[in-house]
Image (cartoon, rainbow, N blue to C red):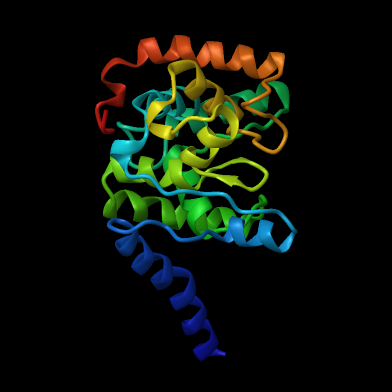
Length: 220
């Protein structure tokens, strides 16, 4: 039993630690979610791009949409957690409060779902990423492995599928549309945006104008 526990801890802690050190320099070949979707019968479209080939519009859009304090926190945005908790107390409705780093940790190493085990591992992996990786590398990982639609992973595949362009040449509005669907990419479509997605993209565009130095940690 003790040996099994040691092996399990090695798998769950040392494995991601070594992979994170590796991913500081090399592209991510595949993630657990991609494998799960493949077994479910979906296709897999992805095309890794370095930070310099990812539109600055998209980087600013996801910060404006997902995590305004990405460049300032160390993995956890405690103010956002407090807002979520207060909203839950007032309205009885629980929404997500994940930072970009938390979402990257989940996408890299974990499976879909909301189990306590998955959340606990996410809480371990998040500071691991922040300690090992520069902020711009975390953003690069996130934009290359995020699910943008069924079988579509990463900004390059999404830009090609929805707008027939590259991730480097995304316009500001196209970038805002991609950021707008990230909370639920299996329901929303950036290429055929609903009225809700259009409104959300417009809001993201306004927020980008207010970011100022809050995006100074990512490569323009």
